[in-house]
Image (cartoon, rainbow, N blue to C red; front, side):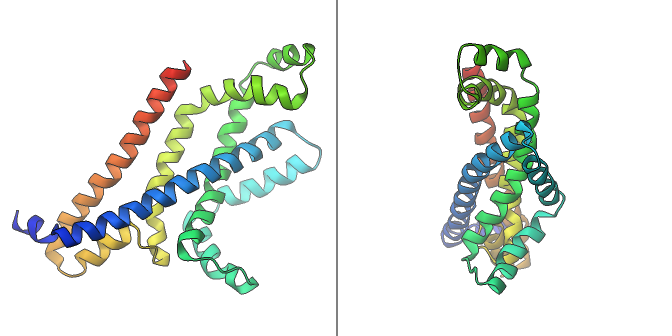
Length: 217
């Protein structure tokens, strides 16, 4: 008990909560960007545009089969070699957004494939354009079916932010390491606190998903 009290002092808690805020900020930005980008990629692959869809699908598969940590390292260490220098925060957001977009695009493409073809024909028979059919008829139905796998992937995104400690992003994981490096007795209390924080964030995300699923149902 003393180890917990000594490790979780007000100063240490404040330091860790700042890291949690960075974790949440990276997660939210990456979720928004990856969802938009993943939707575009998924639609392009679904539409089977000659040559272009195949090219996008090939590049997407390459990204999906690379380790996220490698993409983070590439964004932070390799891009400056060609004149693109990003702060560690934005390097993490860019890397995670591209990686998660590749993952989400496959979910979105699968969701679009699950929609009955009659929906397309019915919408077009009323005079709707292809874009209108996709925006107002197909995507809303597809997203409704995709909520569980999408949320599962986004929860993985939140947990994967911890990998950015490898490029010294001062997130919750990195700051936890800094705190328990002061004293080996702090390891268990800090790890328990970090576990609790990650659980709360992901649990709230899952509750939001369930509420959204019920609303759309």
